[in-house]
Image: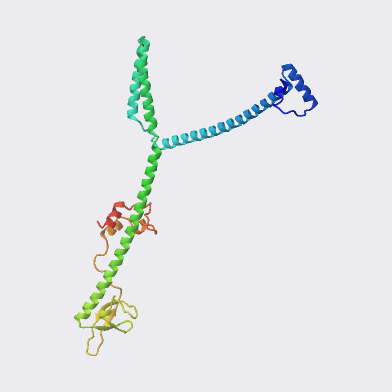
Length: 302
């Protein structure tokens, strides 16, 4: 026996007290000293492995508790958000009716049990359990997709804000272009009126009453002196044979025709100011009372 156990654990020198204890213990157990050493080594390895397993189990338990705590916190948060969004007096009439029916059936079952006629209660109880489970499932499913609904509403609101911003920028651009075109039309009209007046009097050139420089009327592109920039208001033909024709300088010509948008006037009278309602970057002021339909009509020309 000792020769067979000798190959399990290599012989090593141990203190005398330990050696004596090993010898005595082996004698008490009725086994060889070498076998006792082998069993001690094997037991030590098993104990080491068990300690490692305990540590791993503790890590898994901590991870599980952490995830469980996180799930509980999220459930509480979702419940609070749901309670905030739902009115305090909200109700589910369809579920209330079904629950009332269940209460009535339960009362009937209790009366049946009290009367002693309970042989066929099991099928009815199963049906009631199924209905209760179905109602619970329907009630829980009403809150499952609320996050998706909130995300959809948020995305839709952002998209509408972007469209409204683009619409406001387009309105500013159209209004500026309209004012520019109106000013250009007024300039061309004033220049054409000078040319018609000169044609009626047979005048081809006249002196600027500001700088007394001769100006060829047919070459004018605006009612202003090309030399000093003074604005011409009218032509004063010469009175005698040796006199001179003069271009009368006055205030800048007023815009002719109806260049004001009636919608702009109506909004101004109603207290809506486009310059106030639109930010400097072209966006819409969130505190503005400007109606979106007015913006659409303005851009589409309706």
